Amino acid sequence: MLQAASRMTLVLGGARSGKSAYAEALIEAHPAPWLYLATAQAWDDEMRERIALHRARRSGGWITRDVPMDLPAAVAEANGPVLVDCLTLWLTNLILAEADVAAAGAALLAACAAAPGPVVLVGNEVGLGIVPDNALARRFRDEAGRLHQRLAAEADRVVFMVAGLPMTVKPC
Amino acid sequence: MLQAASRMTLVLGGARSGKSAYAEALIEAHPAPWLYLATAQAWDDEMRERIALHRARRSGGWITRDVPMDLPAAVAEANGPVLVDCLTLWLTNLILAEADVAAAGAALLAACAAAPGPVVLVGNEVGLGIVPDNALARRFRDEAGRLHQRLAAEADRVVFMVAGLPMTVKPC
Amino acid sequence: MLQAASRMTLVLGGARSGKSAYAEALIEAHPAPWLYLATAQAWDDEMRERIALHRARRSGGWITRDVPMDLPAAVAEANGPVLVDCLTLWLTNLILAEADVAAAGAALLAACAAAPGPVVLVGNEVGLGIVPDNALARRFRDEAGRLHQRLAAEADRVVFMVAGLPMTVKPC
Image: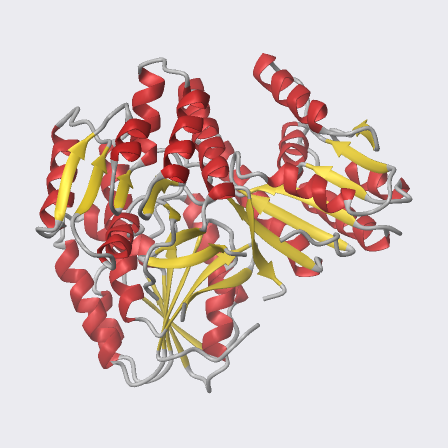
């Protein structure tokens, strides 16, 4: 089931579908050190606890860098295997900062294409429930869907995680 | 990845998963003219904008017809390739009008079966989030699930879109 | 499309995706009698109606037992094919009773592993929508995701239902 990461892999799935663990294992199939680009910001205790759990799981070969906003530059500077965890929180940060989301997506894509080593990107699928009541949530899921489509079109491999297991979306 | 539409194809997926673009490409693999049956009603500016974006993307070979309610009759009158976009808004219109949803579903299925050319139907998967608080949303996702099951049982091909890419559900 | 149940099969999917009907058919491919372990509790009329619909669909070979809480013991006592419908309501019952969810999951897994006949477990995927507003819903979808991952890791077969059709998640 586990393969070494292609040059660019997109790992999509719902909450608690095992995306991060799977993505980490893809990167760990390459020689260390591994760069972990963390986009989470610890707004509250719940988030702090999630971040701590994720960190505790990662072994010593990982170098963690917090990049809530300037993800494209951080990917561009990587010179080995890099994991982006996750696109969803990055997008949230961009939208809250009223940044240009389309331009940021294009910059990220360009950085991934130019990266010398494998890049694995993790994103949450959020568009499979009832249409949300509030406009911000609707905008968020639109932007997330657009970003995922854009990255998936260029990715060498796309998987959709279900219960910790990867379903192959691409190659299709 | 792209194949010409089978006689009856069901394209399912979440919000912004690339359903419409994929469905249009399936139809455009056949000779024009192509009939686009649009079920959206422009209730507000957000919806008006979405409709305009979809229209702008479609090339000259398309003939668009607005059918918020009587979709079965419109499919029955088609004499070439036809795209239904989308089942979800049609179902919303039926429920708001207190129409007989089961009868409408049966009529649609009969019209698809009798159509002389390929029919591609687009529907939103809305049942993969937390159970909605309000009863109308629960009823809606029940009806949507039933309609999709019914159409999928008869369809020649069913795909589940993830990030713009089709996963094959049927043939399974 | 239909195969006899492996020793342990996990059937996941959204609301009205045909999980129960598919799971019942898997079990009915074995000789009767079949044990149906029902975790639903009839809190209100809507739930009572759903339970009645499910019961009415099942043929004479089924023995139904209500096990809102002690599912591991009931699975352990089974001496033939057994269907658990569903994990989602069981988890809801456990959380509302402030039971030890992790211990209960481990006990269920042990009971499935020790069962003499095939076991089919049905669960709702609830993690593919926008992050829920309320903390209880977030906790619920976290626990559901963890339970599904744990069972999927040990299951012989995992399917993800879309519009009444099974997509194979495992073997992957």
